[in-house]
Each structure stands twice: as C-alpha cells, then as structure tokens.
Image 1 (tube, rainbow, N blue to C red):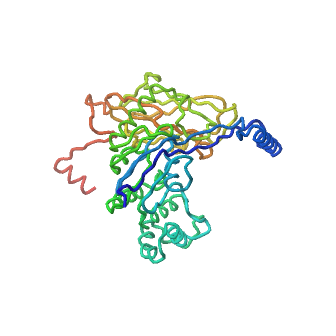
Image 2: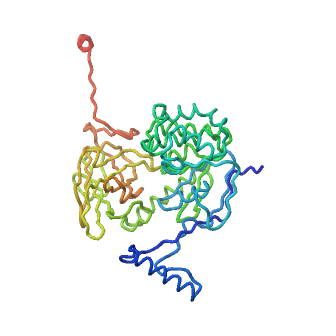
Image 3: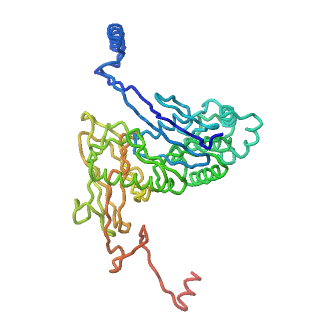
Length: 429
C-alpha cells in the first residue's frame, strides 16, 4: 500500500455562472433563452449563453498527503477551500485531474450533511456508518462512545430535524471521528459548537492522527492550525500559493493579509462573504481627542467608524453589526456586536456610518486585526476577515504613571491592605 493517503494531480473544478438579465427569471424568458441556445448550438455547434461565463474555483491543484498527517487548509474567503474538501470527500466530481485516496473518507463540511432529517439520532448513526462501509456489528461496538461524545442521550430517539445546529454538529463529528475512517475531512463547521466542545473535538482529532489516520482541517483560527497541524496548504484564487510546514504556511498567509489590508481598499476587497446588499466600504480608527487618528491608545476612549453603502438605495431593516478584534494570528480576542448591547439598528438606506466606541480601551499596546460583519435578519450580508489592522499605542490605563506590559487585556481592579484587627474584622464580616 502507498504511504500516501491522498494524492491529487492537476485537480480542477469549473462552474458556469449565469448572469440574468432583467425579468429573465420569468418562465417565458427562460424558454426563449433556451430556444436561442438550441438554435446557436444547431448552427454554430456552440452551446454557450452570452450571459454565462466560466469560473474555475480550483485549477491545477497537485499535492500529496502522507498517512497520519494533519493538514491545515487555509486561505481567504473564496479561495477554494470548501470546494477542495467537497472534491476530496467525493461530494462533487472534479472537472479536470485525478484524486487518489487510500481508505474510507468521512466528511464533516456543513451542518446536517449526510443526515436524514426524518430519522432519529440513533437511526442516523447506523445510516452514516453504513455509508462509510461499516458493518452493523462495528457500528454497535462504537455506538455508546458516539452518543456519550455527542452528549445527546436525552434526544437520541428524536428526529434530527428538531436538533439545534450545535446538536447537529456534535452528533456529526462524533460519528465521523468514531467510525474509524482512514481520512477525516473537516470544514470550519466546528465553529458552530460551544468552546468546550471545540476543545473536545480538537483533542479527538489529535488522538485520531496518533492512530495513523489522516485529517484535513479548514479553519480561520491560525493558532489552532499551528497547534494541531503539521502541514499546511495555502490556497489563493483557486490555486496553491504555498504548502509545507504548517507554521511557515500560516506566516505566509498572515503576511499576505497585512499587505492586502494596507494596499487594497475595503470597498475593493473581493474575499468577502454575504449577499452584498449592504457593504462595508471603509474603516477609520480614532481616539477621544482625534476621531481619525488611525490608531488607539490604551486607557483612552477608542472609536471605530465603519462606512457602508446599500445596494440600489433600498431600505433594509433589522440590521446587526459585528466587530471582532483578533490577535495577528486571527485568533479571536474581543467580540463587539450591536445585538449584545441591545443597540438595535432598525433600518438603513443609501450610505452612512456605524460607529463603535470602546470606553477606556482595555487592550495593551500592539497590533491587532479587525474583522467586520453586517447581518440582515440574522443572515450575513457582508463579512470581511482581517478587514484592517489597528495599532494600539501605549497609554496610562491605571492613571498611575506606570505602563502595563505583557498582560494582553487590562481591567479595573483595586488592592486593600488590612492589618491586625482590620483583617480580623473583615474576616468576620
């Protein structure tokens, strides 16, 4: 048997993107367009609409993964990460190239993938096991461990269509990890679970690789990639930009992000998620004395202005704005959301600015990345990872004339010195 668990050769995936003209969604326009296409094919031999174009989500992807490797696949939104995992998981077929896999593959790409909504959790365990090629005896042998790991004992005989997204993920991961696939393919779906369960999953993934099985993992948390993976693959515009040691690949990616945030205006960023109904167009940072200073100062009030534009000047309601402050490795540090502080934004139209103010900035000096998102009725309409980088300058947070270092996060606190009877009185209080 080959020492390679996965081998790809010139792998490519092409999609046809349709550009609808006005009212083209109506049946009569769809029929007319199809007739025109048939006529074009009949007389020219070509079968391509003028309002369609080819899009290569992946192109010329070649790499090898050894058995037991833990491979982190990283890249900006739209780089082709999820498409690659779908090809490796045999969920979709490649347009060009070949994939060689040694052993069974278990994929965890989207919440509820591979589940039948009408079946119970118990029945879906046996269904997924059968799909993976496990015998009923093998599934039964792992059954109790799967249920215990997923923490769904009370809901085992409930149809999974009634499960929350977190319960879906817990059960799906438990099945994928315990039914002994040789290759485990996981997208960032684990982010749906709570922190405790995420740590549990990461621990299980480490034990899986110690048993000689292979893991492919997509995540935007670079700390997790560095700690969990020994190899990394960086995708950019559907192609491999770098591969090799995970830490070196992550460093390359973070360097690219910082250069991009400086050189490309937020309005022109293409690596964003969402429908684009409301777009963040620019970001400005400031202090209490200068709202456009471009930096923050520890201990002073900090401002973050996000300029936005609405498409077609429509009125949009139930808007939520999210700001996530990260370390430079993109691991989350501080989450700021309008929904958390119940600052509802009823509607937006045209263009404007969302302003977030952080009182007595409790972050020590350093450089941090800022990710921003805009939601409409809880659905993401715009999300930009590492949209900008902000410098935090040293400040007198405690008004003591002394600066705090190596703390990361600062907080208000006080000390009391109790001597003799004071200490005793305080104890008896």
